Image (cartoon, rainbow, N blue to C red; front, side):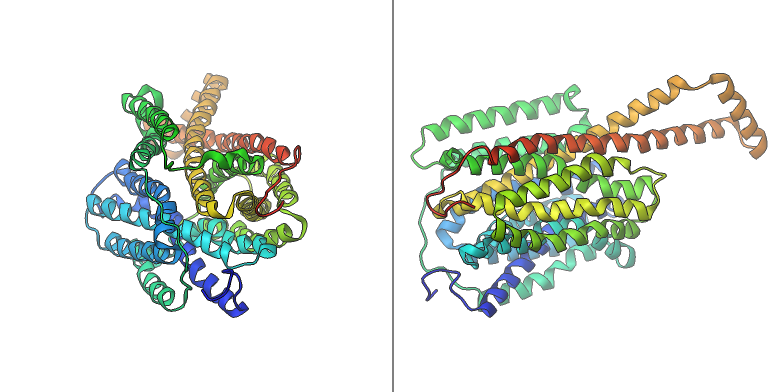
Length: 512
């Protein structure tokens, strides 16, 4: 670029560059939740069962995690623009392959490539958008970026429900192809090229060990419920492999001249606290609600996929509205106070509003109760990102973003696993409690009356009643699961408080 700084561009150029980059990020992250909606519908077309199609999600997640670890090396050596466009091209070609797949093996192979493309898109788009705005407007930059990271996943169930109801599951993938083609052409023509690049080498041994540990951990978290967690030899082996991988990675890094990750970033308290806030509040807590709310609307309220998506869109809309607002607040009053406000709104919603959702909650009331969740989440992402990037040296901004996305990924996997496990645990707990307190004589009398009244076989009546008990235990278990998701946010709040207990000095960027 001709100017001294990447943000020394005209307002039109800034808008154009940001739009091109944000469409790619929005497309990539939207696809993750859109695919979640259609996965249960793929058992027939791909001739497999639910456990088979779960690998469509798991393979993508694993590939994206490994891709994240490569991003700093690729950006330093080839530049953000080249890596971004390569990511868009990979993602689009893999989407085409997913849509054309006729077997489970084919779509899993395509999803691996798609996951790698998503990792390249997300890190580079983050770096590029942040670079297009001057220091005093970094909050606004991250508010705009939050539209992709926070708004797109919540919009996924709506888009997925519409495409599958009015077209077919293949359209979920095919729709990415023309968008990706247009983005590659527009990026080649208009996106600025970085003049200076730092050539770095890659620590392959560290990359292998960290990738091995991450893959084992993510597969364990995604398959734990299926295999029975620690009653399973497979899960025990994956946990062992993950722990050994992380331990060997740490030992190799201690004796490496070129480390894969520069852990000196964590000497800055703002960076460490920001990462832990991101890990616990976003990953462990918010991602549980992302997973639970569509399930609640579909399986407890009994809404069709499209209507459930529309209900989810209600709070997604407020994520989109308040993401730029949070960015502007970060620029005006600082990142830390904005994080505190967002955390308070989110905690109030998670502790006192969302646990009230159950089968008997009217749909309009359920939608209203989730709106503060959208506000809290919309206000959360931008200030945390600004805090992290301002507390990292400029030459380590790519690594800071990689670490952010890595902890979001791993934390989100933990959150989803926790939600699944808690739903099952509390459902069983409520079912056992129902059975314990039943009046057996009255129950037998009631079942006999239903049998005579409806002229149905006794076995049918008992099975219907058992399913009713299961549904109600599932219903009441949801409230417990919602509440327990909030407890992880309480843990994350400790690190929000820690932001205000000491003064951080950022030599490069100043205090956020």
